[in-house]
Length: 220
Image (cartoon, rainbow, N blue to C red; front, side, top):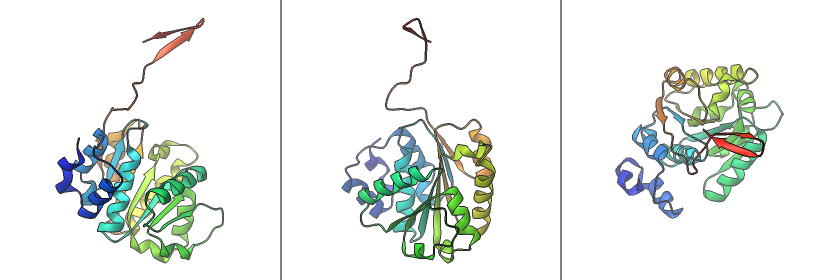
């Protein structure tokens, strides 16, 4: 879908940034997210295949929070390596936005983060920031949780569930965006999050399944 077809639903300054970066088309999951209320501060649970464009949905969410709502965005990832990757990518794509990364092992409030608009962190570090009652948390408008299916992980799931629960009770009018390619119970999870469910099976490369035996692959 052309982004111009949804121009009326996209804040003017966000739309201008999309044009500046050369975007002219939305992938199906992206268009569905806009229609589901991405720019109306609604919670969204986005469940679409790998490489289907979920990162741009997260970018639209934090651009809307920073530029339109004048609030901060926290981007939560499961791994420090992924936090570093996202930090480098977003710093390159959005040089005018104040972006910070906080993913170290030091248990502290990191008060310096008050100067930044987009904060990329791990769930464990974000939990530490909340426990230290970081004063800048009151300015958070949107939280993106990447790989939210880890709620079902025996190791990290309980901590992530507690983190989301605390956030929803602590921050008034919080917009929560959950991203995942693999959720077994999307309807149940979206209900718990109070989120609009966005699902789509489009992927840029066709996925075929097959069985390899004796040097040959038999596709199902």
